[in-house]
Length: 463
Image (cartoon, rainbow, N blue to C red; front, side, top):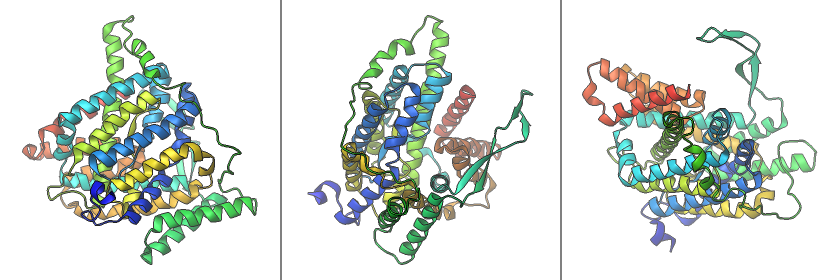
């Protein structure tokens, strides 16, 4: 049955490898089940309902990825997009969370339209191969940075100095300065996990990432429950309690009136709505495209022209998942960069995604036990995956400045801006500029010019 559905032999894999990869992907991204409700509850949403919506929407999106595209990628409400939802749309812009969900639903419908019409796939094909390689490397750095941060190896202090804005205002105590931290027990556990993974990898042990998570989690449980050393493990709560979805389900329908409230003028209302949609559409689109390209490059899934076969199915899964997520009551659902951990574990087909999706559903009743896998156990996996994704750097011609600069900015801006989309934006803009002024305008696909204008407009709008 699995062979018929997912063509395992054709993709050089087997059931055991795919299931192991799916489990690995789930554990590296399971944090979203707890983090997403924390962020969205800041907008006034019911945390229990959001947790349930997160699990269901993630499962739906990941199942769609498996059956529409047969790819080993998992989906969930995106980090960054959920913060934009809570702190920008509902915070600084003053919309209710119902209106924000309505905006997410509209963006999902727009994604479906531009995917079905082939626009999103055309965008993927318009990206130069060297920028695709840079996206893969940048995502690797981004994943590794997240891993270091989650491992608590980086601490962020506040620079007591002052700096001056362009408008002349003085801002004090606002510059975070990263530094290494090895003082906490959870950090030492993460370092232990990194050593375990390194040993497993150099010994070519099959399932190294998953085994590393299990070993590190087991040591963490012993340290916390036997020796009383806090390493971030949570004891299972008594009993199983499934929250209600009612507080958020279909609540987006109550937000359209507020979103399109023209009482203060049609122009003002439309500008506000358009600014929200541009931000949602561009960030989600390029988070997804970046993750698909970067992870597929790592897995050698791109064809000879550097394009992703069945890209339309993968993009459609992402689009439908966004709309479904809004119906359930969560922020934009997108393809997760942590999917790279499952790919690195050998996942090559939709069976990996199916495994992850099933685990998201099981997490609804097993959530009390997920705390037994601490962040310190999954963070080393992200660091290792970052290392593996560095391989694509060799495909970039560093001697050609008009390619090297945009490639470097793509790579550097992803971790520093903490955004895949912003890294892609920087690379696209400077690729177009350098080619244009070097007299190579014809080497730039027309779609790239359009995207540059949209990215610049987005930066102007959100300033």
